[in-house]
Length: 306
Image (cartoon, rainbow, N blue to C red; front, top):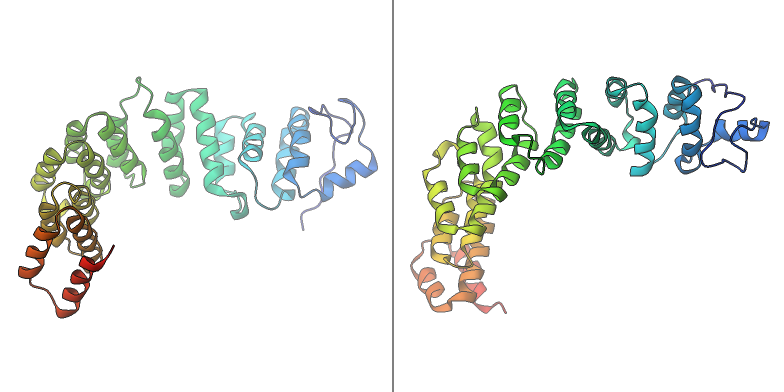
């Protein structure tokens, strides 16, 4: 067990803790409470003042003594404590955050705080993080924040990160943000990504949003997309979007899905939309489509669904 840290005789408190004045000395009872404290809610206001006098000791104590889940506000306050020594210090401690501290939420808070201090420096900071998990969480967080910042070309930034080995969800998040702004330009961006893996990661969000805005042009783009990069996820999203207006086209796309389970689920969803839209046409398709007796019963059963 870590040896309890000695608390300073006095330090500023905002707000007052246990009713003491800002410069009052700590009693033995309060000293014991600090040593035994497991509630972030009670101790954090004191830590903020303690950090003014001895940030290293306060930081060490917080890491040793705080247990259980922390709220977002708690995490932000502890980050503020560490960030007094600079972002590089906070980055160092991120890799040591224990599981019960909700590591993902902690990293997001650090990233958002870094962004507030300056988008450019936040980007530079995120790119220097050595731990891959922490780096990806931080970048994903910044992608959301940067999507509304006109001074940063988010597509170019993400492409450069991918070129340097980034594979996180920030790719699909960037694709979503770009598509909401300009679907055709987002499609060009996907095709220009430096590797097939990143293209696959981005394609699903582009197709889902684009198909909701312009089904025909989204279908044309998906049809021209290199077959080796065309994912079942993207085809599924297009088929489901098309099922509400062009169910026969949607079914053709659904049939092309390679994963058996995804194909079956998608075809059933399209079939239900088709039946509700045009029961007669759905029955015509059902009468000529070649399938197993089990699948025939399943797809015929849709006709009897409410």
